Image (cartoon, rainbow, N blue to C red; front, side):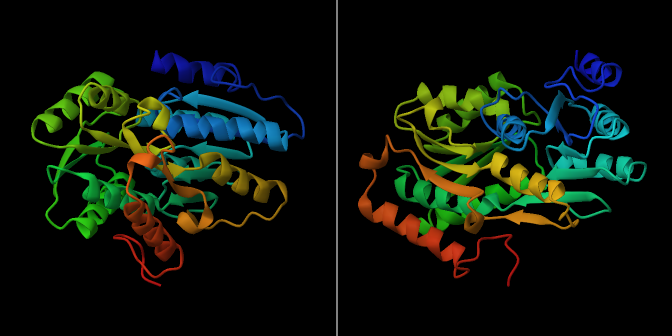
Amino acid sequence: MRRAIVTCLLLLGAACGGESATPGDTLRVGLVTPGSVADAAWNAGAFAGLEQLRDSLLVDISHVEARTPAEQEEALRSYAAQGYAIVFGHGFEFQQPAERVAAEFPNTVFAITSGQRVAGQVVPIVFRIHEATYLLGRMAGALTRTNTIGFLGGMELPPIVLGLRGWEEGARAENPAVDSRVTWLNSFDDAAAGKEATLAMLRLGVDQVHHNADAAALGAFSAVRETPGVLIYGANANQASLAPDRVAASAVIDLPRAMLLLTREVLAGEFVPKVESFGLESDVVRFELNDRMRDTLSTALVQRVMLARDSIIKGLLVVAGTPAP
């Protein structure tokens, strides 16, 4: 099925994965995601960003899902061959395929979310998500009754590890006695595995759960909803709606905003290849409390967390992995 999706992209001019592109002078933007846009997190945010580009800037858009490295490179190459001005490769794993394709198509801008480096027209969009996960950790460290927190990761990729470090650092800043348990699923899609892995952590005493596992994390929310006394923290989007009485807060990446900023530069002829880095100061990365749970949290805790947020924005507090000024 996944191969059929990419084959359709090649045969039908990138129209099968989403909005079809039409010939002409209108700027065309493509998006390749490594998973389903129904994950309520990472991929859903990118697709929402693509739709916002269409609605706000009147560009033509197209989307395709490509999961394997071969399919991802094939999809990037197909968009570039058709003259797309910008192609978003949505994830760290797109960096090397984009560099190979860019050598053949130097006029296409390849924007790699959570990318590594600038290489010609390949530009990384870096999200300092660890600044927000640090704040989640501060909450978890204060709210845990068992002194045991848990993290569920889809794959052990550098951007996800960075978010994990922020989560753990924040928790220990609030509560040095905290123990952290981490499970890697090696999948971003297996919700059943996500649920089972989360239940296993809960049986070991974890009562505060964070994740970065895309659709697989939907299983984690299911496990938490079924287990009294456990809180979960959203990743990449405000995920309060997935467990309204159990999501204390979320580390949010405003993917539409980031994609809009870069695309405007290209449209205005002002684009210069560089690392596009966004942290809390940009409002692209955000810490968002669940309003439904706000009244259950102590005022002192909320004030401490928001003070830490302000300190990060001002450069007074540096979270692990953040380059020193």
